Image (spheres, rainbow, N blue to C red):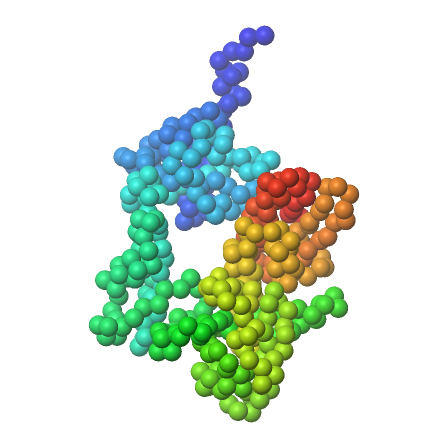
Length: 378
């Protein structure tokens, strides 16, 4: 049977709805394309449609069929062969693509790291956002040097601390942190409360975490004094606070005579998110859309994703309860039982994030021969 040109064209024809990444809910225009069009042909057609001379300044992003939003990561320059590859999301096909117009060609941009830096001035409440582009091999020192040329410092010798933060404040670098001794430790300190769900105790973090230097042989009573002074908590309220060493979400309550440093293993503090000193007290702060404990979940997932799936699940279970929809299901294809996990934060953005991370975990199972085990979104 010979197929006519028209029949073949109808098979490969694809009408694509293009949306600006800045307005992801609205169609800007439609183009009739071929599923076998190359990456270059697609961006050339988009550039021609919007009147742009340089097609390499077009960056495309695929559509997530589950969240009905743009995928978190854009399509890399010539990162796919054909239009059909841009429209596939797992086992579903979309007819939506998002586009943005860059100020420099995409191949050049991909060689740079784009950082959005929020500068908190020491003497002002104003926060200024700076977008900084640097070569990917740049160091933290390079970021700070560029930032110093863009901001107004309180004095010429002011120091800048650069942190990746979620709803936290950036503090000045205390003198004691600049002069750490060989046996001193810089640890994380979190505020937390306890809740009971399904007859299980769960730790909920809130407020603003901070770093604290602890010295060798220093007791909890001595550490408490410095914490109270740092946070300026009245004596009557502070007397009700409890202190605990937390590892993997399990609190081990400390007595005033306990040596705090003995609880913390010697390791890089900036990666040791699963260990911290917890301050248990009531949460009197206004509720926000994204609580700090959600941020801890994100951080755990980022830092632990490359390690064992058993550890990842232990971390996730601290922040997930077992009730009704919307939920994520875990299963074992070899006849094991199924568990339905209820997300505490059911906002669209958080569900999308968790879904992406679970999909990545699914592939990590496959990589180690664990076919039949994985995650699905309900």
